[in-house]
Length: 384
Image 1 (cartoon, rainbow, N blue to C red):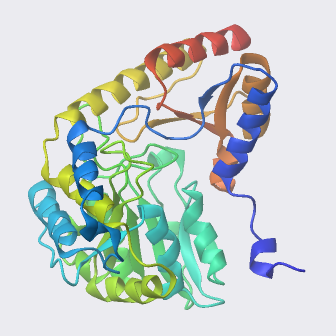
Image 2: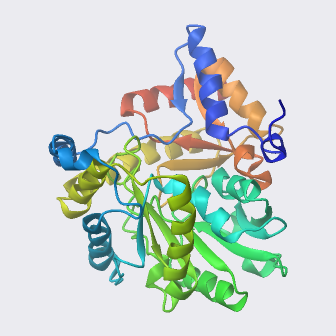
């Protein structure tokens, strides 16, 4: 039996490949410190776990959930946007629950991209933007985010044709850890309005910021709801990566179109998980200070260690990653392999995030402090 051509044309998913490689090394008995995947090591706050426990015990949560998210969940998201960004959303038409933001990021392409259409994809960027475009039959078109622009998109070089339907952005960014202020997001909104594009903004890391920087929402830009859909998540802000709950907010037309796809391919997120997410959005946020302080401390450990070995990195202002160029004469893969084979340190090669990711690696900060320090010591032994 032959698989579909759309599957044959796709590369293996980066993080699945990383997991496979890591598992093989550990099966050999090697003590590998993984700085590859951004999976928080800190626990989900107790009040969220308690809410989930109570919700599971309620038989009302055992039945099919709402396709679009419960009214209470959508209301909690709308209220959080009002408090956090000063953005008013209609919970009925401008908010939708997702089975993790990745699910919505993958499905939105099927609502807007026809075979032969194009979407502008940040390069380097989160792989799912381009993969979902391909799965829908479209063509990802590289949108340059050069280092000399602090990895912000260079819209002056964007290749827009009559088949271009959407443009992806995500700030704070994965993998580059770049951040965008409201002016940069405003330029993107204007660009998409002028070119009749849907602006898709991945805001999964919006609460993980440092040194006084506060990440804006694209929906704070005047008129953004006419052209923009923003994706949010509890994964990084509330240490809930395994719970799989997120949201899409913004353009009512885009929410409606995404809903057509989702109602045909899934049955919504477990109501108990939605109740836990409500507890997250409405509850105390003291843990955010701990999360930010933890990642900032770890960021400084990595940046200082690399700069002591000859790099010249500026500490990033957001996300839980450090994005670093590889030494001269190395490729992303050769450098990652050298660290894995000689130091037992696992990092993500940048070429998995797009052609312009070649020459970089990504360090995740989601490991305990002592293991992160040990990883830096091991690297120093290999690279000194």
